Length: 303
Image (cartoon, rainbow, N blue to C red):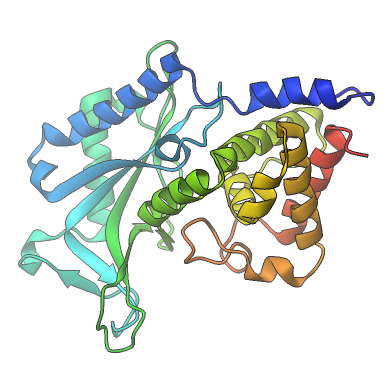
């Protein structure tokens, strides 16, 4: 970026950065979801699974020319739970035990369905978490398909009360990952409404800034979800305070820079408001986040 970048330049840049997927990209993303649903619906597994999108696509935080889609294929025969459960890996059967798929078998089942629908050579099974189906220019974006189970977190030790419902992925290496896509979706929509739609605009702006910083070699590429998490932890009054995109983005970055320098970040959570933003099991660190927001501050010449 030009070291002489001024307010009018930044306003124009941010106006481009906050744009969501184009209509063409949006239709291609929807097509990708329909194709995975078709792969499941044409099989006997259809009654035993549900298919839905998660991540930036359903949350409308994806940016133009960066429109990969994450699709969950969730087994409905069983759910896993913690809290009141004797073990976090203890399954609860919804049907007779003979009818449910163990993690390895469910993963294999989803893999076969995708191969039957897209073609054997079109499904990359080398990744630890998801199966990847490559993009077809002009037709669909890259698709990551995640085989999963429902996950229930009970807040009381006796298991009473309504549990938080999440999604559990058993990885190829045997490790598990719990995500909370429904809570992320609802909380993100609420924050976007309460900030006059500035929340998702600022998420897209930060994602585009990270793309530019990676291109320039100034930061290491991070999962795009980190940018969504960071902006979620900017208080609503700060996102609403500025009179322009430039004012708002600068105020948001300032809050994030200060928060990653002191203990404030210890109270930050992912948009699902269940999982801490920093700590064990995360793909990023506080230092990664701090470097990203500081480099973005300098990238836009906020000095």
